[in-house]
Image 1 (tube, rainbow, N blue to C red):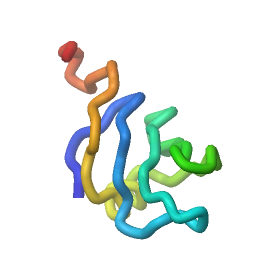
Image 2 (cartoon, helix red, strand yellow; image 1 turned 90 degrees about the vertical axis):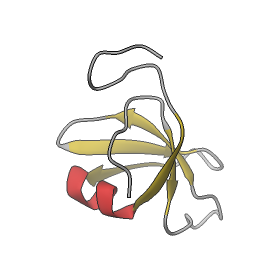
Image 3 (cartoon, helix red, strand yellow; image 1 turned 45 degrees about the vertical axis):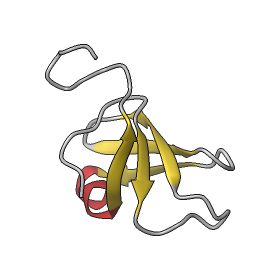
Length: 71
């Protein structure tokens, strides 16, 4: 389970997508989290609680940090 994520992060999910990939890019955050599959491009939205339960780890960090710090 991950604790922090931001726009542009690559996230590994617990279960693979139907296309076989399990890497997703965060494209929107808020009460809902919008994700795009890296392998096939499918876009899905999950509520924040469901996303946090399904996410395994943050593979790469994007450009925006929730606390305002830059990489």
